[in-house]
Length: 288
Image (tube, rainbow, N blue to C red; front, side, top):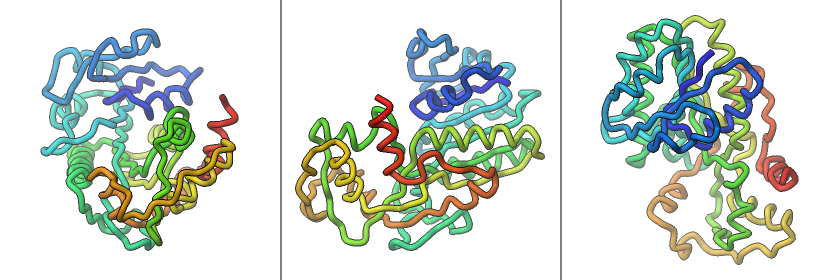
């Protein structure tokens, strides 16, 4: 098995950690070729700005592809630049594309699942949906197995409310009725591993999965719980109207939905390691 990761970042590293000890060759791209020189992983430079012979060469022998590069105005650069090369890989068994639950738009706090029509309301979510459709078309055209994973906010070691509280950047914003799903990076790796393994015995096709936790929760609850874990006083409550969020931060609060993960768990028989933020944050704190 050879796994090639377009956009070798936080999630790809978690997946590689999970695959450790197996007979797997790992390669991928980052914006700088020397970004992971010490790891022994073959990293090739790629900025989403055109097909290069170096990436084509590095792709040789790949059986599984993970794509996490953000899309541009035209959609996904990977399928645009290297779709023909991927189609010609003789042993390609699986492509996974990391998308966002943002494609559902605002559901006014109601539940959504994979059968809910996409209704993106921000430019970044429109780009993601366009990229999803490109990968769906690629799989249908070339008879390749493509799985799309819609993700909420990702947290994990080094990227959690723990760091925000310790550095004094956390805010306890109150917007009545607002909830968010989230997902620990290790549970993304768990889901990707399961999908990659299943692809080895499935016929080529298309899969769509929400990879989220079990408990959509008010963001202020996460702040208070984490502060209690750390023995800190939580930051004061701030009303949403006076929170002075960035345009991107405000756009997150403009969408309110509860996202089901039932399809993911039933398809692969998964039990999340961290079904809520509580287990995930405790694990981060106690593993240090």
